[in-house]
Length: 301
Figure 1 (cartoon, rainbow, N blue to C red):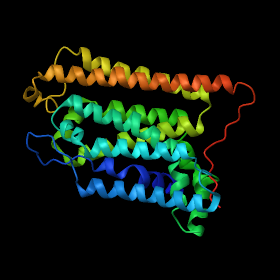
Figure 2: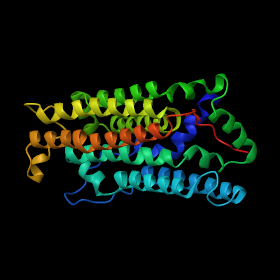
Figure 3: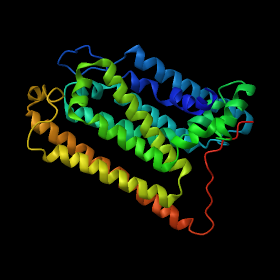
Figure 4: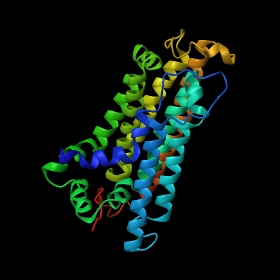
């Protein structure tokens, strides 16, 4: 169980709200904000842990040390993006339109997840605990010995990329995706899978991978998600019957709703992955001489 501590802390800071984001209760036909306590409470706890740890760290090391101001800003922006996806009317629209649901997923996976990782959530989260617990968890977070083996494994770039790809493709099997519309439990599992796999993916790219390796994995992710988006765009018939059943209420046919959802995955999603890949290529060029892997070790003393 101790070997799972880094992943458990990361999940506590970043993931619980997504697991419980969707409810099955119907709303009226007016977009509304969702203030489900099963969503709001985990989000508030995640923010409190981060801010409490950040305050403790900066009292010890000085403001902007250990975690820089821009990193804290990234976490807050990612938290706001995640909260916006799960609480704003976008969540309500996602229960009725496939296109809006796809936008919600993209915000979680390619906006919120990388920003949260850039904020160094493990570093801040560890500082929210007493010194003894912080040091024990910090040793595990650094991945030393057998205890850190599961964390080192799932954050390897190839493994994290594969897990993220499997989550995306598996949940877009039509029968399984449609099941999320009618089953709250399955829908929660879908969102948890998307967010956790995205967090592992971006953690591996930003914290573990050589810039060239990260660029290659981002390009590969752009390709396979683009293929899936193109499949949804150009399919000659509706594949997701339950998800597109209410499209006519907003002037779309089910096929048009499916096509727009595929376009969202294909184009905006692809732009983000390509942009990130190009940024890593630029970083690779700058570090072309003497680059060393800094890993994801954390100072917790």
